[in-house]
Image 1 (cartoon, rainbow, N blue to C red):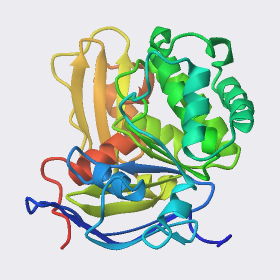
Image 2: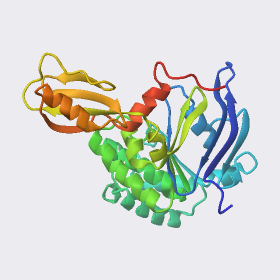
Image 3: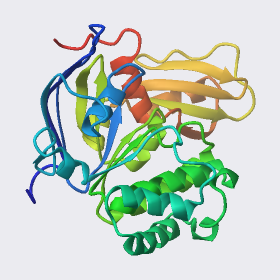
Image 4: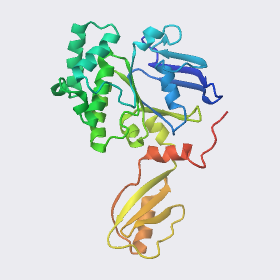
Length: 313
């Protein structure tokens, strides 16, 4: 069991009563200690998959194990390995953070004295100990999100599943939560993250799977998956204004972003010197260059957007 995957899915299927097949034989493994991204467009099957793993949804067929524990045969033991942070804030806003954590632990049979010790530890880790005795409704959005994580960690889960944990929060709060999640993972907890913020997944996660139409269409180490991109996109800041006519560069695509910047798309193997030489001949001087968008976003759109190849049956 010690060498077992943190999560192992084999042939996982879910057909709802209305005939919709949400999962079509999903195979997936997440290694212990990993920080793993589960990505996909709306309706791809992410929520159904998470629902099955967290015992909120019954699978139609297939196998699920958590650290080698079969979810179907030993549901209670398997569930004790998992902490779930849902997208929606679902604690009582008129309870105090300390009480929320202690009462949650009580549902899992943790004695109150031990729960109080754990609550202090987790609220301190979430930088919320100074708010332990205030009404939760007075917390900021970011604090409420961190409280959700602290509550989930009360049972000392070996696997923490976060379903869109930063949805609807601003970038400052999001980056604060990234720090919290990195610390949780560094302490040994396996983390599975679903998110629509692909920059978030690229920054946090070491491995990923992309699901679409109920099937895993791409998976592997983040670096290896991103290496499959055959094009790169850049934004070039220009000295002065752009000329009316841009140079044509074989194999690359240039277009004006505004009067003082260019968007460039080029094959990964193309020599950038060719681009700069062509721009120089046209009297265009590049002041700075940066990546136009994160690479994972480019890959995600290619795999799941309009014109993407259909999922294999």
